[in-house]
Each structure stands twice: as structure tokens, then as C-alpha cells.
Image: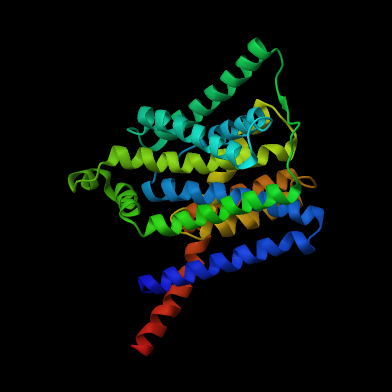
Length: 315
């Protein structure tokens, strides 16, 4: 499949996805819109996570830290800042924390990097809890300024579409090539002149920016937040699981898996939470053992083979 054909296909798919999501609030019920909002949240989180972690093979467990930073930024500033400015500030603060965190731990790989990012996430959560108890005297924030449902929905949709669009652009850029080179052989990439430290920090910060923006937008969905809610490790773990099961190295895998598992979560979590977690774990194990490229690799390998045969027949 040639480069331009792939680009046009990806943009058309993204356009169709955007159009369907824009139409949903006009004919969907409150429950369906709420479910779609959860889907879009994980589309943005898993797509941006896969852009960095899928390319570089660095397993980050810090998504919930950046999500929580964005959520608290929104809760503290919505009274004094416009909606979009509050979201932008949440993204900027998350990126700043990611730069500091990345400079400290991105020289590590594998289990060490994953454990340290999770440890730093817990450190941030406990630091926020301690600050609220000792300084403000209470834990949690009540959001008195809450935008309308459609405003929140359109914002999260824009972030999800932007995350996929950035993935499309970055994967075709020199920056994306550098990220992929780090994932393939970091020492060789460094030998070829790639500033691997800078590229890793920038990629990590880009992922954090999306998580912070999504956290800032989704905070108002709860109207009351506390550290346990917005720094919940499950947000980070589910983001990683969705990206891995869908195919972290693929463009559309995280989006497909985010939709499937958000619907699965809403269907099973309340009625049979143990079945949902078992299903998620089983699919992860099967994907790692038999489909390391994720579910999307099975789909797109078939499409890719069909397209190559078509090109040959018309060539």
C-alpha cells in the first residue's frame, strides 16, 4: 500500500468517524451520549499513549497522573478562566510534569521504567491528598461552574480526533521515524544521529498533554472530584490495556479497542464486574501470546494484502 493512498484512507476514516460522532447527540439518548463520551475519552488517551509508547516500546503507567493533573487544574481554574483556556492550562501543566518526570526516568527501560512511572503517579496522588488535608483542610473539590453536556462532548470529541490526527501526522514525520527507530534499536538510532533523550522527552510530553487535556475536560463530568477519583490507577491501566489489545503500534487499533471495551465496560461492569475484568485480562493474554500486534493487525493485514493485490492488478 503506497503512502499517499494510506494517508487518504486514514483521513477519510477519521472524517467519517468524526461525522458519526457529531451526529450522535442529536439522535442518541443520554445513556448513549454518556457511553460515547467514555469511548472518546479512551480513544484520546490510548491513541496518544500508543503514539509514544507503541513506537518506542516504553511502557508508561503515568497516564492517570497526567489525567489527574488536568482534572485538578480544571477544578481550580474554571471559576476564573474560560473553558478552553482551562483545558489548555491542564495540558500545559501535565506536559511540564512529564518533561521533569521524563528527564528523571526515561534513561531506564522495561520493568524499571514502568515501575518508576507508576511510583511517581502514586507519589503525585499522595502529595495532592496531603496538600489538601494539611493546607485546605478538606479533600476533594466541588465544581460550581459546569459547561453544558454538548460543550463537554464536543471538546472531548475534538481531543480524540486531534489525538488520531496527530498520530497520522507524526507517524509520517521525521519525529515519528525517530520514535520508531528508538523502539527498534535505541543505540543504533543514537549512532545515526538521533538525539534520543530529547525525542523521548518530547514524545512523553506529547502523550501527557493529551492526558492532561482530557482530564481537564472530563473533570466536570463528575462535578465533584478527589485524588482517589481522578488519579485512579485504573484509568492508566485501562488505557494501556486498550492500546495493547488493540495494537499500540497501529494507528486504528487503540481507537477500535477503546470503543469495544468502553461499551463492554458499561454493559458488564455494573451487572458482572468480575466477568468484565476476567474478559479484559483474558483478551490481553491472548493478544500478547498470539497477536502481539493487537487486534487491529489482524484486520489491517487482511486489508493491506487485498490493497497490494489490487495495486499489482492495476499496475
